Length: 189
Length: 208
Image (cartoon, rainbow over all chains, first blue to last red; front, side, top):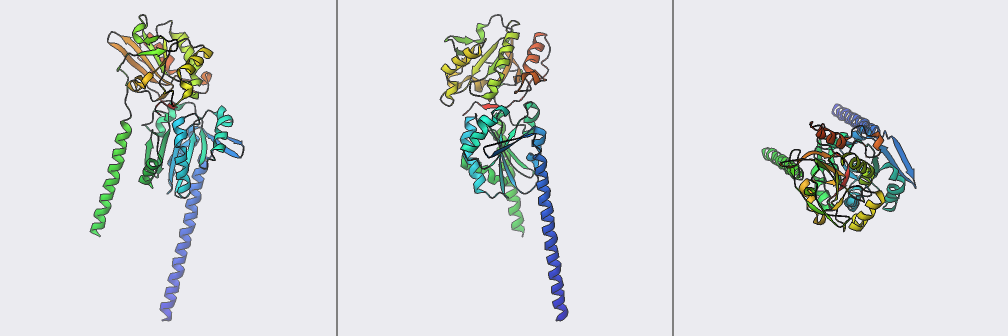
């Protein structure tokens, strides 16, 4: 009886240890992912104004964002303040951002506004619309060199969106309604 | 257990086919001209009230067709360079013909009156046409502004020789290291093959 008890206790300790190792692994994994994101956070410049912060990337520093291999689904939307269909669908991306938990879905709004319009147009827009999703600026004028790296199907017209999780990547050169966007999101969730 | 396996396989097949259908629908949007195609002629209203057609240009050796507009900052960024292209190549037989493909209802900034105003203030040296009814841009397959098509005039019609961007730096003309349109037209003038036939560029969607 005593032996079996101690066996069970031993087993319990063993399970607890396994749990601990699991948690440690998780933390390592998580911080690794964080680390990976940090690579992408290697911004060439950061615009700060009116409490809004917008990091600027060239394509090389932006690229890691397109292939983060954690369990999170990323919705990456290419847009600009002057692009009417882009602005029209932004609320749907915001809704996805607020409806899904951060650890499950991350929405990243990649602005293609010209850098000289960041302070005059982009930041006031983000502020006025209370945009809560992450907004970054992709500033890399040699577009022909990177558009095809984002998707062979992309002509360069915006709006355009990537929804991906791990190796499951879908690209869209089109506008969305909320239901259409959510439907596409659920395909990779 | 076996049923579960079958179910999993079944779900997998559905998932794959859903993905495949998606891929097909994406590539379907790739319509319009390819290099070597004969481009359709058009007759569109110019800002001066006249109609302009490619057949009006008896002496032309070809054309630099630019789908552009007022509202798009990428188009605006290229205006001076488009004027420079016209100045450089009109005397050599490759005039610029600009077409605004946008629906003014969606973009009031791109209305006919605003096109006139913009052409005047920038001193456009080329026709600035309106694609009324938005019929021409889908034939060409223009998806955004600015979007350039270099055509070579031949006995068989105007052959598409280049599709894409003006150059490889939308921000700064002096930093552009590849001048795609200039290189294409120069090659055609020398009877050579266009070095880079297709490029991609960021631009504002024409379709709203």
